[in-house]
View (cartoon, rainbow, N blue to C red):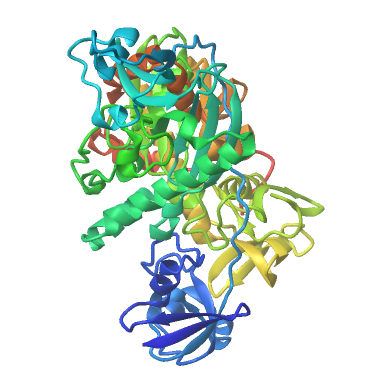
Length: 615
């Protein structure tokens, strides 16, 4: 057994041989960014070895780390296996993330599934020995076949007095889920949750008024097992004994923490929360419920379930009232999840006669086309670049991340979340940077950088291009929050954005082609989700994800998944309508579409920009 000491905190960790440094740190809940889940691909899990055996440099480290970094003792934690005592320095900061919690909410008539009713417990007499259960059943007018659970009967006190019955309505039938001493009819709360691959949002709702009393958000704790759904599914497969349990505990623990946080903010007891509703993509829903997500990761991509689920919340470890119900919104397919059903419902796509394109841009891009009431949907893999993975200086949308870029003759201006010097660049910043490089003529429509030697040294663009060997790069800033060292956009970064652009635009185009429509037929383009909220329209059109003609048609709807969960919490009718809607949505598998490879290739070409010559 060897000892790892972390500088400068002095924290020590005892570890057995056979594990790499990343695994050891993550087991101790120590933050290390690892977008590729320890596969040695992203190069983000850098640590500095201050003492101990440095080992032989791995070939992957030679590729991902500069010679100066290797000479300074910097290694990738996922490729470093401690052999003796070691002192390390962590090179990353756990930064505060900006998480989208708000969204458009349509008009809604409240019709909650949770109802409270005050009852009077009377002392039975010898001349009428009616059981307490019969008293309760009679006052609540429950069906004779409706059996009151033993856990509820355990709450009955065998003495006269007032009690409050908590009832759950489902499919027009009332079920008694909890009994409380005294009159607690004024205190009735619920929680609406949006589980994204990257972020999780939780809102505490007063079920009487529909008012949001508090909200909390955090980065999905499953980030330790990979940034995207496929790396988390891979983690499940590689850890058959406990991988699924670890992933479930991570997300359930996050929700419990946020429930407590919102209760503390609002001065509410979690014992008075009676329903939790969840919107999430299909993989996250499987992992929340502890269901095998592996089939989602391989053809034919058939999930274990897609329907709505309604059961006691305590069965998966959620901490609220004893009888709290958990309602999980329905999905359509493996890659059109409950979050997209929620967004489709919130935007009223099933009711409109307009032609509307809806997209939730995140680690995947999920798209729905509403054409006169017909709903076509598809999913495209947009995620790696747009979440900062596989980008040289990429990071999530947190403090220090560049979220917008402007290139002028006076130089490069970057907008940084939270202000100050940049620490890296997030998805909206990467798109903005590529938009500006295209507009300035530094990147061709094919995605390649121009040649530096073809620029006049007096050209303001000349100093922006530099060579790394034979590879061309663009410098956005000479210093970062971590000290000297430029903030760069590399040729590989541009290629990653190009792949994301090709995926999203080809998804749009494939849906329009199937419906026999063109972009000109669109009345609106509705953009939802965490990433979309930070994405200016000129970045969408400037990079060619959407054509210029739709600039004025773009509408931002915010966190429509959370809004859908809220609406389901407040209305039984909404639940029924969402379940019907999920059955009406048609799913189109892009990879199985005739001519898709050619379409994808065509959609990867960036738009040309007039006024700048591409050298």
